[in-house]
Picture (spheres, one colour):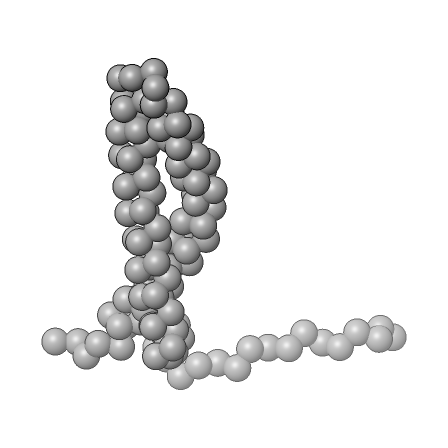
Length: 116
């Protein structure tokens, strides 16, 4: 005799044959919605700061190139580039979860909205 149990059969759902019910909608809390907005807003702020730093570094390079006495402007532009490079992982760490969470919140709102 085998020590194995017979396979369990799934409990049938009351539905017409060939029809599957929609999956249950996972709940989204108010705190989850708030953090989705906060992460997305922070990602937008970091992206704007990176854009300002990029424009400022180009202006500083042009200023440093115009006069040989302004070498410090070129070094400041390089410093800004290092700051931009360091901010890219921060932007990804804020933006990707923020977008995923926002999409989940919107999907939940569409699924729980009353059909018209």
